[in-house]
Image (cartoon, rainbow, N blue to C red; front, side, top):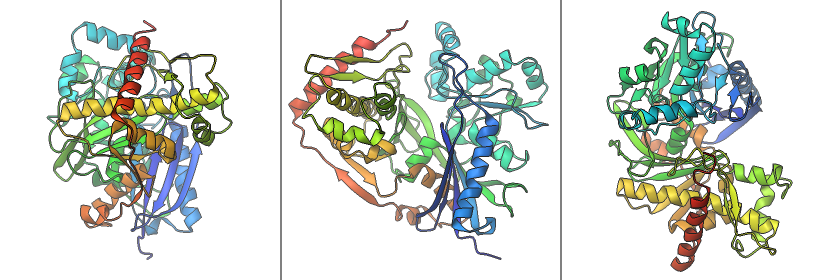
Length: 498
């Protein structure tokens, strides 16, 4: 029998499904990726077809193994990481979804969130879950499906329907419906999970009108929870690691000590600080969330979610047509010495942390006759760094831990000019790792630890390597002036669409 030499990481994202084969030294041997449909039934609504998610994920897994010319017997375990909060409800008997998945970006339940806020429930929810009351999270999406799909609520009450975030859906499909589980990091993003008692909360289930029988079993991030069934691979593979994408990225960055912090520059930006075994309350509208659970030990984090990060570059490309390809933005922005007094607030979907203003909208300020597309491109890149600075300031205040370095990953982190400006405007060292596949690496590390592929955390920490380090001698007065104008611009867009 062939020796198990690799870990298979399934990285199920918002726009595509990916599979990576990773070896013991942390090298990525093969990557396969497939995009799937984004469904927009009406303004502010975003859906996915769960069966497309599954078929694309299964397809790229097979493709990655084929590219390596290996079979399932050489895979020690599968690690899963996923877009968080996206909500799937399916029939337990048939395995068929009762509705499209409602995506984390979807805003259809904003009015219900406002009703709960007016009823004075926001603080109770925050105290139990560590989350702000927002349409971003899963609970209101479950409620919407049960209220709008004919017969769904009755079927749910009869125990016929299952809910899961995308990790749960993949595990259900991989195991042929034998395992209905989620890990603690994904559970902590539903508005239904008490992060202090570490269990589903009866009061919250009642508040959101979600039958507890729908909910999956909650596991740690690193444990064998089941094996794949025939049809996925030629031999059964243990499923042994699960974590939401940002928690997986944090683990992949080896932010394993209290006070360590990472920022993933993707469509949005997701900044997480390790707060150790303490679930620290935020006074600054950050999220208190579970980072991961290893064995019996739970690690918590503070998180700031920025809705529009790299997406502002896509807007420059597709909306304004300033660039033909996203990678052209760096040279265009560098063609001018500064932003020329221009500030872009990319509140295209409202503002996330630390503002949490779903009624904010985007704007460009400071335009003159001398403004060019280069100034706007530079201001767009700078907006990513400014938003990150706002979250880091909030984290420092909440945690009482000074930030000395920021570990970065994600597509936009390859932009050296942005990373240099980020270092300058924050005044902290920015460190980019050699392997930017940190989300998949985190899922692989969780899975490998569970099955003994890696013996302990120290062995994994030795795999992480630095690629580049950015420090900027930006004068304090320059930084202060930039931030003053940025905050003035943010104030102008607040509450715009109410």
